[in-house]
Amino acid sequence: MINVASPDIGRGERKAVDKVLRSGGMAQGPQVLAFEKEFSNWVDGRRCIAVNSGTSALHVALLSLGIKAGDEVIVPSFTFAATANSVALTGATPVFVDIELETFNIDPKAVEAAITKKTRAIQVVHLYGHPANMEKILAIAEKHNLLVIEDAAQAHGAQILGQNVGSFGDAAAFSFYPTKNMTSGEGGMVATLDENVERLARLLRNQGMEKRYANEVVGFNLRMTDIHAAIGRVQLRKLHRANLLRRENAKYLSENLEGVVVPVEEFGYTHVYHQYTIRVVDHDRDRFAQELEKLGVGSGVYYPTPVHKLPSFNKDFDLKKTKTACKQVLSLPVHPKLSMRDLHKIVKAVNQVAKAGS
Image (cartoon, rainbow, N blue to C red; front, side, top):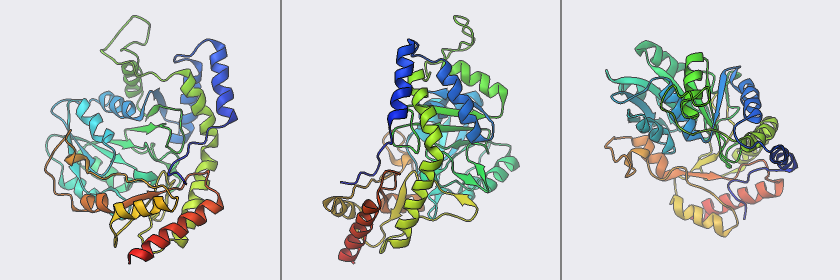
């Protein structure tokens, strides 16, 4: 079976963890600080704050920007629930909007149509590793005096005209979950230009303390450990090559798959293919996935249910393109550990299933 994801953990990560364990200091410490400084290079030198998950990064970013009860934050519904959960956890209301079906990213026109007097921010998701249209989003935000938060959980190293995502908005959040383009085992990172946002984020992740036992605000325990940071630092050094391999694998798939809609990469954008997501238009998507599994090719559906339709939100929004995407998307293996033999097998299986169902 070719799995849809396969974390690349090697000798370097094991040595880094062992060094931390032998040091006797495993909690947040010098490894976390070094990881923050090194990750800053991937977001145009922005201030970085390491936390224990991507969801925590989103939550802390929103709180540090002053999002609170009574505010509205515009979010796509075609995303992982954490995008909206992080908004709800601040007490604010997520307002769900539709996507552009070509890239699966938030539709700027839908964003502008959803703005009310209560709107404080737009939370943009760079889904699957393809950047959202930040030029249009930032123009809308400036016009209406809104904050912009980038959910870059799936887009480490993705670019727009050479500028890395995570360096466009007022703040950004990354995830280091094991299936992401790079991992720390678990973890997340907040990035911002604003030193006041940085300071509050550091307080919130550590029980509201900068100095021990001098709690300034009511905070959380969202710290990253030095163990996780040590893994993250090794992974960060491998990220550029890993992304290149993902792009090469994606190129091969796109040039050879038949009977399905392959993902796009818009001009001037660099897609890093956290997921290689096709659209199964002329077949039953779930049965298509079952047939692939019989042929030894794993796949995943990200995401089968719009967030606004989940029991945790249960909101009534008419999002036609989101509904279509949820019925059609299927993610295929694209990770850096794939061999050419694996790629041949994936193409053969997809084309065979597509032809059989036509």
